[in-house]
Every structure is written in structure tokens, then in C-alpha cells.
Image (tube, rainbow, N blue to C red; front, side, top):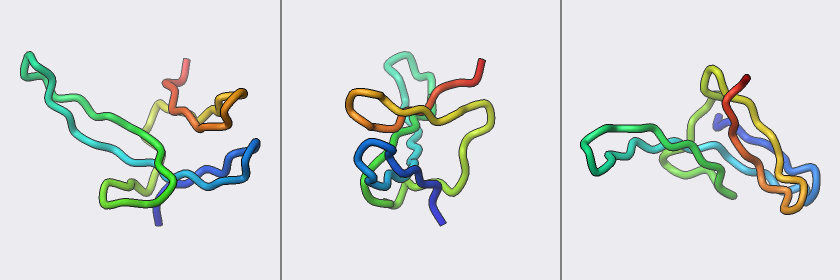
Length: 67
């Protein structure tokens, strides 16, 4: 089961995905993003050290590092 969040503003469900991206210098980083449907890159848990917040204007979920 993919990790999902329901927007408080729109009521739409968003699914968390991750992707490994190689930067120009050769460094590899993991990108996290939300999408409206669960795809092949969907993950089933929230990454450690991160929390979900919501953009007040658009209602889109955001992934932030915990302080």
C-alpha cells in the first residue's frame, strides 16, 4: 500500500513517490514528490526525518525535513 495524504483544501488523495537522480557532478540524490495516482515509483512509508505539510493556497502536499 502506497503512502497517501488527503488534501484538507480539495479532498484529493496524493501518493508519495521517490526517484534516484544523478546530478551533473555525478552525485546521486533521492527526490521525493507527490502525484495524483500511485505509479511504479510509489513508496509505502514516509522517509525518516521528514514530515508532510500542505500549501495553504494551493492545497498541494509538501515533504519537509523535520527541524
